[in-house]
Length: 80
Ligand SMILES: [Zn+2]
Image 1 (cartoon, rainbow, N blue to C red):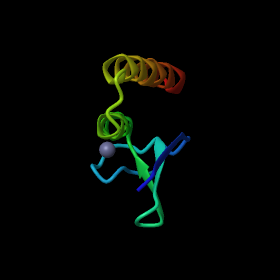
Image 2 (tube, rainbow, N blue to C red):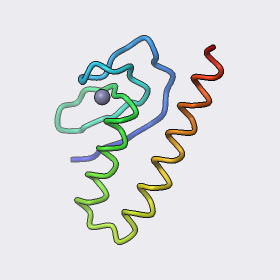
Image 3 (cartoon, protein in one colour):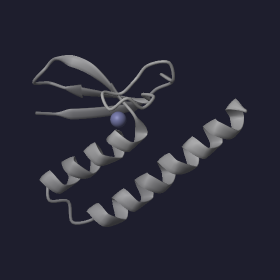
């Protein structure tokens, strides 16, 4: 199992949870490029770091959350 995340511009498409998708994840086991929203992307990143027993998970996730949220705010202010 391997997760790969890359940021994209996919505002028109939806994540499986119904939110607008903004990231792509490739899960080798199902061979499909999945599109997901920021909230699910953050959750998945946390799950993977937790699974790997990363000792810096809390610091990394805090930084990642901040980065993602400031990007969202920027995107929203650019859109209006
Ligand atoms: Zn989602």
